[in-house]
Amino acid sequence: MSTVSFKNAAPVISEPEIIEAQIVPAGAESKAVTMSSTNKVISGGARGIEGEITTKDIILPRINLVQKTGPLVDSGLIPGSFVFDKEVNLSNGKDALKVTVLRLVKQYKQKLEYGDPSTPLVFTTQQEVIDNGGSLRYGEPNYFQEIAHLFLAIAKPDSISEQHASHFYREHDGKQYTNAVYTVASTAFTSVGKKVIKAGYSQLRDGLWLGEWDLTSQLQKNTKGSWFIPEVTFRGMHDKDAIAFFDSMANA
Image (cartoon, rainbow, N blue to C red):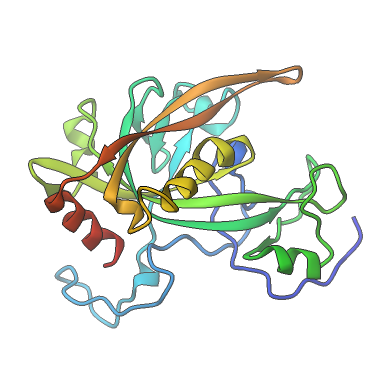
């Protein structure tokens, strides 16, 4: 692969270990995802922490969708299930996770050939892709695909053990919640990202956090094999008090 000079590349995101959302090869240096796009100073932090703490110091855990091959299934997790922080089983994929999207960030990620050890480049706009010799057409050389990072508030499933309940540290109306990032690309961008974006220009145009979704998985097949993709189904709008709660999470 020839060397190309790229300019204005967006910060890369730490790697999620699922096929449809691979951003950075294992071991590569990257910047992890934080909740805020701006670097705000946080007040009222935990006792024992000193110094100026900003939103970029708060690195959110990830949700992963377990595939049929890879380190997650090798560790004993069930294919098609969703896991939190690579270790806490949230759902078998059939039982829906209740999630509220607080924020969505769309980017364009370079699609490398299988086995290429290079770090995929990520840009924020189509024009940046074109200016740097990339293509937005599938099958063309140096193709860049659409990806989306979803910042979620996740309601604690009933199946969560007491050992892992502390991850769900936010409470509203008797329910516990936690924050996490879920990155989608390829077929997952279509099944999740595009649905959320569409809702953001219709019923959720005043804020993605105004409504709740069911997050499940399903097996998809083609002539080359099969893999799991995520699916979201809109559950409906939150009530006034819930909207205020999720607004505070989204705009902290």
